[in-house]
Length: 188
Image (cartoon, rainbow, N blue to C red; front, top):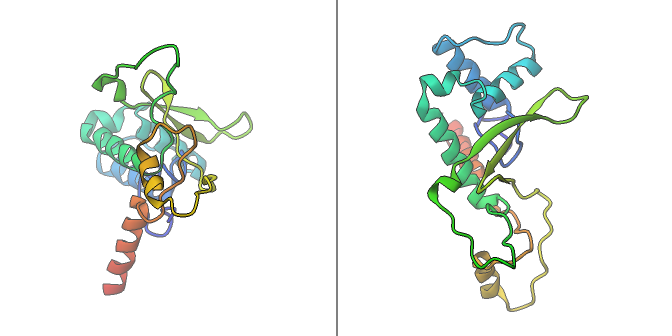
């Protein structure tokens, strides 16, 4: 599920730093496009190099392959719609309604260090006037539902509830990709 077995890419819902599939993708793209690679190629330097290329901080891949940025953002949007926290900041009760424009939804990617002792980089993604785009934790608390309220549970997906929504189980695209990969491997 985490991309280590089948080397799936862009597992933003699992980790906001590059995983093995991302590092392998960036390494192969760097070789094929004659882009510089870190020397010496330690796991840490490869991961940080992949993070800087994926976010666009090092614009080498996005300059050569602009569709890479669109592909990354489409996957992020899709996974965030399935298991992300609220995409927009909470509304100010004093203001009536916030007017959003298409340009507000553009994802702004950056990197930050996890902490001072750990030099590994992780992605930070912002949209909607600087609101962080985060994922629901795997062990998110699920509201206790009353018996016989299955339809109200469905309607809660469309409400403006303040409670954090739980991750959807098999609707996760990584689950679908990995299950297809297992079927493909068995047929070989």
